[in-house]
Image: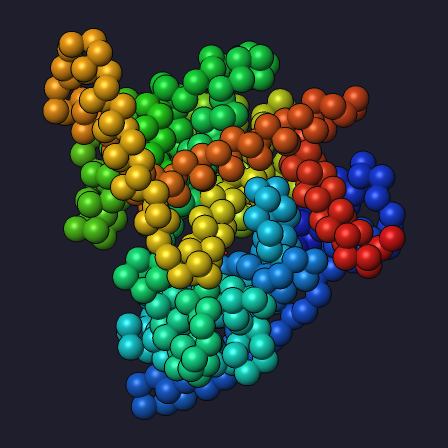
Length: 472
Ligand code: GLU
């Protein structure tokens, strides 16, 4: 195990301990919240080519205070037990912060997806699912996986199919996994959800004029300069939505092959197409390539968004940061030691457990859709449309004025599933930040946003435990 990965779990625990000290909660209860409840480590054989490979994999359920437990499955050659434990712990706090009624979990399969064919990945995913079923580590009421680094809707469809085959007749089987393709019981807007949530979160944070004044920034997303590390699902949607809906300027982008810069802005949608065609972000028209790949850390900008993996901003490079705000779109990209160094310099770190909670929020909506056996909007869309149309007709009749067909179409539209999902996500991100900000303001001693977010989660989890009668 590399030092970086070992530090990740330690860093999560250190952050927990720091916030726990302010919480006033009994130490027994804090110990229970802190610990990973169940760790399932497995090894299984999968035929690759004409040989068998023994695959190492995990599923960790961090907290059972609410069920099901919830969290993605990561496919990466870095996967190890401590990393999955750290990620599962973060899921518990994340769910509490956005009022998603789940415990936290996470899965990891130690494979590098790029080294396998689609067929081999399918066999690995199906075998992993079978192992989870055997030990009761998956199910709509027990533990519900989702995509994470290296997995997506395709893998979720394989998981669902394996589950349905082996659990024939289970009426709520569709709810055994989220992040599925819409054609297979998924929900519109899930794929973009984490990135869209990052946008709603950052937009809310930069909307407070007094907070921004402390950082020497003007309020509002428009014109803010942003650097993104990682053009995977989260980085791509974050960049594209901040740019298109927020009017932000993406001045730098970093990927495995290197880092590019353009102070007047990089069009993310065009960059993604360029990378698909050429296999690299380097050479994208109008940009310059920085000397080292890791130079993204030191680019001058308002908001730095690490959207790839953990432990990217560490003791050894935190001093290079020139941004005013770091938005943790990835899980654990800033180590605890680095955060101390950044905080001393007045740089605000927006914690992962709040900022990237959009994914699990929309997973929750998907799970509810699956359990209700009906798409959102089916009941009221037509009704709303007819009501709005009647209102417009009456207004036109009484005023004697007519609006254009285009205006009418805009007003009388009933909400589709994707509209409801986006509005539910927006409401969730705004509301959660208000709660965190309130806690931060209430404390006499200055605390970080991460400490405030942790305190918010701890209060909610503690009250759940007390209601369960576990800790009177
Ligand atoms: N893997 C995502 C996360 O880290 C989503 C989890 C989920 O939807 O359950 O939050």
